[in-house]
Every structure is written in C-alpha cells, then in structure tokens.
Amino acid sequence: GDVCCHGNVRYPGNVRCHGNMRYSGNVRCHGDVRCHGNVRYDGNVRCHGNVRCHGDVRCHGDVRCHGDVRCHGNVRCHGDVRCHGNVRCPGNVRYHGNMR
Image (cartoon, rainbow, N blue to C red; front, side, top):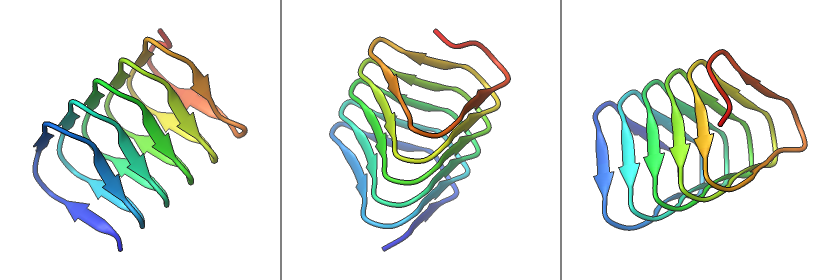
C-alpha cells in the first residue's frame, strides 16, 4: 500500500514500497530506495544504494545516492541531484540546484 511519513526515516537496509511514497522528513538508508508508485519528498534523500521508482519522483530537497537514480516517470527536484552512478529517466529531469 501507500506510505505516508511525517518524520525522519533512518534504516540500515533497503526502503521499499509497493504503492506511493510521501515523506515530509528526511530519508536515509544504507541500501536502496525503491517504490512501485510515485514518490514525493518534502525533505532530503540520502542512500548508499540506488533510487528506483516506477512513477514520478518529486523532491523539495536534495537527492544523493552512491548508486543510480532510475525512474520510469519524471524527476523534479528543487535541490541538488548527486549520484555516483547514472541518472536514467525516459521522462523529464528538472532541477533548480546542481546535477553532479
């Protein structure tokens, strides 16, 4: 189902959701962030793995990962998009910060 969280999430493994994800805090994990729906973050996303989404990704903070950012929809970020891997997206990638 859907996940709505109004606090910070810190997890030593993977964060997975089979619906839509909406966070109003920061997400930090040592694995991957995976979602089968749309993702909306009102904070920052930091992970040691990959960020994968089957829908759209919208973030009002930064997206930082050590792997790839893979999205089947659009990526919209008001902060920076920083990853050590690739950004793969068949839709649009829009950001107001830096792409690194």
